[in-house]
Each structure stands twice: as C-alpha cells, then as structure tokens.
Amino acid sequence: MSARLTIQQAGPAMSLQDQGRPGYRAEGLTVGGAADRVALFEGAALLGQSPDCAAIEMAGSGGTFVSDTDVRIALTGAEMTAKIDGEVVIWNASHLLHAGAKLTIGGARNGSYGYLHVGGGFDTPLVMGARGSHLAGGIGGLLQTGDTLPVGPDKGREVSMTLPKPDRFGGGKIRVVASMQTGAFTPETIQRFVSTTFRRDARANRMGVRMDFDGDGFATEEQLSIVSEVVVPGDVQISGDGAPYVLMFECQTTGGYPRIGAVLPCDLPRVAQAQAGAALQFEFVEMEEAVAAQARHLAELKALPGKVTPLVRDPARIRDLLSYQLVGGAVSATADPFEEEI
Image 1 (tube, helix red, strand yellow):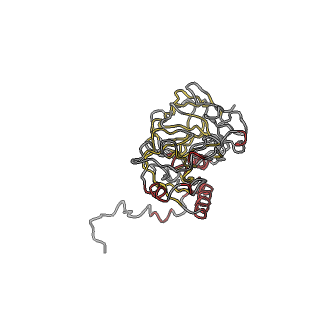
Image 2 (image 1 turned 90 degrees about the horizontal axis):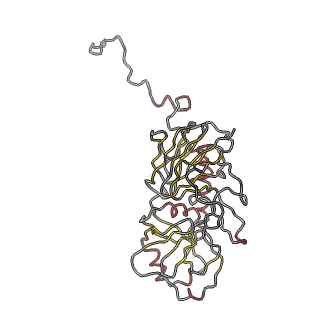
C-alpha cells in the first residue's frame, strides 16, 4: 500500500509544483513550475531521486502534515521553522516522518518559498505531462486543509542527510542581458537602472515580482508603439507607472510593455526568494558571460548529490578517521599523574 500524506492545516499559498510544462506556449500556457527550481534539485539530492518529482511549495509559511506510513521527507528552499511531534528538525536536510507523527512547518525565516519533498515524490495524476499546479492557467489549485496526497514508491532509504547552506536568499546582485527593447532606452536611463537599489515589492506572486524604488519611474519614448509580442520568464518589463516587473514562471505568454533587460535563468531563484523589502540591484552582462554562468549553474545542480553529507557523521564512513586523533591525550588509569617519569 502506498503512503498518503494528509494536510491537517494548510498555509495560505501552498501548491504542488515540479519542473513545469514546457512546450505549450503556442497554446497560451507558459511553463509554470516551482518558483525556485534549485530547491527541487536540492530535495532530489537529499532523497536520492529525480528532480522531476513534485514537491509542496509553501509561500511564506507552511502547515501541518501527517503520513499514514513511515515516509522520508526533505525540506529545502526558504528556511522555515519545522518540528516533528514538537521536536525541532533541521532545514535543508532529510528526515524520517513516522506514521502518525505530526510535521509542523511555520513561517519563513529568510526567503519566500519553502519546499516539502517526500521519498518517491507525490503520485498525483499527470496533467499535460506534469503534476504541478499552474495557478494562472487554471490547472490544479492551492492545497487546502484536509487534502490527502498519494506518495509514489520510494526506492531510497537514507535519511538525516544535509547540504551546504544555500546563499540565494536576501536579494543581492541580479544579472541581466539586453532584451528586445533595451536599445530603446536612453543611456542615461540604463545607467540609472543599474545604479538604482531596488526593493522587492510586496506585490509579487508566481506571475511576476514588482520592484519598488525611490525617484522617478523608468520609460522609453517608444513604449506606446510596441506591438504585443512573446515574453518569457526573466523578462524585466517596465509597467505604465515606470516600475520594473521581473516576470516569473507563470507569466503571460505575450506582452506590450517595453523590456529593459532579461534576468539570467540561474538568477531567477534569487529574485523569487527575495523577501518583501529585500534589496536587489541589476547588472548587465554580455551574452557570452551569461551563457557561461548558466552552464556553471547547470553543472552545480548536477553535482549536488555529491555534496550531500550526514547530519551526524558515521565513523564507519569517515575516510580520514585517523586524522581526527580521537584518542589523543589518553592517560593511564593506574599511573600517578604527579609522579615524575624516570
């Protein structure tokens, strides 16, 4: 019998998410999927399974969960308070959730999106090749209190594994490349754009993130003559009020606002995970540098399984055990320590 995870109490914005549905843009549906793709790869590495497995995405806060059988779990993304039957558990790590034990996940300490993974992944029906909800597209929906999710067969056994703490939270530098309308902005406007320290606005969701800032808005004289055309996640649109919006994975398929630049895919998780008020600054890079950065990012994702380590190190697995000098400083149980040696 397969395991089933029941949501005893659901946070305000929880949904099942995976890598999304590529290939449907011509039909009017963007890829969707997890706001922070890196978190999916981290969970997969911790549980020793495919990053294509769906996980529960929790925006801002989590909920309370119970499984009817023992199940392995992993917690990644924005660090949230987490307890199993009242005992605090480590974030960015894997754990065993015993049958009937209560997993409680609270509010985010940093970042915006946390992820709950299960060994074997959630075995909900495939819709257009994916299990994740596309909220803007009307596929699936938010998870609710009382929902029960089936868990797929788990071929792994290891738990109590962890990964190095990620650093994509709290805002920071966001790399962009020139977009379709970058050349329509004056050099002075571009310079002001890259020299401005933006703040992640509270008006943000899975479709886009608004940038708040001080001073005049950004604009181009050509913005009223732009014909609606294809837009993609990462595009930085300048809205009618002059504020930049970074489009996310559930953005529209076309748009007519001018695009001052496009965020590198490897930097989108940093935008998604910035909490309201976090400082972000954009930096233009050449396409050659962007391609190299994305290649490094993909290589790092592929290498994540090799960075997994036990939360508590097993002496049998420590290759350099002798270097720890565990018996250094040993003394005789019978000799008088104050007697001078001859």
